[in-house]
Amino acid sequence: MAPPPSRVGPWLRRAVDVAVLMAAAPFVLVMTGVLAILIKLDSSGPVFITHTRVGRGGREFRLLKLRTMVKDAEQLKEPLRHLNVLPWPDFKIPNDPRVTRLGRWLRRTSLDELPQLWNVVRGEMTLVGPRPCSVPVARYRLWQTERLEVTPGLLGRWQAEGRNQADFDSRCRMDIDQSRRRSPSLGMVLMARTVFAVLRSRESY
Image 1 (spheres, rainbow, N blue to C red):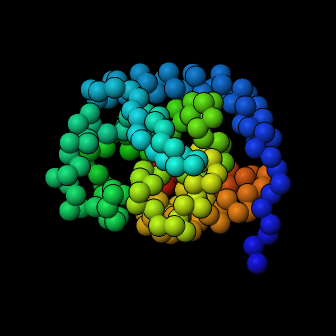
Image 2 (cartoon, rainbow, N blue to C red):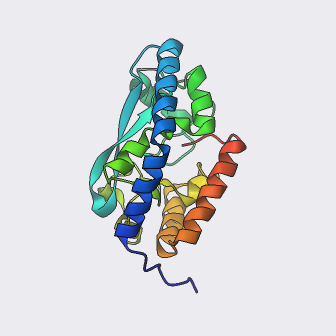
């Protein structure tokens, strides 16, 4: 039997988020500035890109990332659809030719997700929680909607476990389990496992 959900209030999680963000702000700003310059030198196109993601309660928001692909990557998705290894609308192909040289390194280190700290500032995300998903709510089955009852996070279980190629059903089960068992101790464990996964250079999704 799974342990009961933590009674730690949303206000406390928000306070922790704000405290961590304030402490990390100088490093994040300097690192983001350096990466922005490198991205502009590596390939043409914007430094930042946004993706539509589904947040708490099924509300959509714009997820911010550093660009890791060529500027016309979306237009190239359909011609490459036959190489997709995940059930549509999820999309992932091994050795994606749309990813830039610098982009591969950014993905291996997960530094492309650094701007998502701004989504945390805005309250659209939290530091630890199920990763936000691109699958529209209309495609959810009833049991899957439980993952929408909590705020999505920067660090999620399937990401920390290196399960980036898991299908949507599997990710939902992990996200729901994470939301049911969320606690400060679980958050610390996921942070440590994510750092370990990054050090092993697993490509982020």
